[in-house]
Image (cartoon, rainbow, N blue to C red):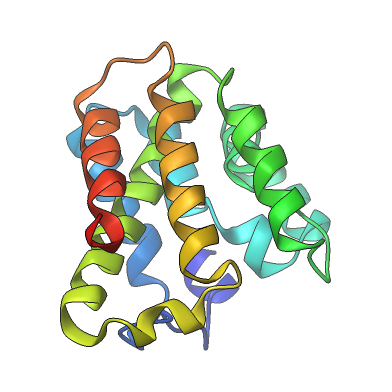
Length: 174
């Protein structure tokens, strides 16, 4: 399902097939001790947001059950097409993720760690042009990664959360 949903999509920086991102996120979740449903949710974490909204959510629920679906929905900042405006959507996500369960935070954290690490690599290779590809620009993107890191780490002391806080703090050379 992941391959089908993300067919033809590529990563913003490297241009690699997008499907490698959810697979890498699933690997981080597995390495951090995630269970089978968390690993499946990690593979599908972008499917609703970037691959079809409500029809995809319904397919995930039918195929993988309510637990996986709840984690995928929690990891998504919208299921609407077109997406709502960037800043309010991200602010709402940050607010919501603060109080999510550790099970959900693991999936979201793995996603953000993988994205932040890719951003660090891109900054080392092509900075400052890298910021042009983000809807939030440099300032908004830095705010978002740092706010998500803080929200995830709130009440959840986990090595992956600490990694996200470190990586987000180091973005932008500040």
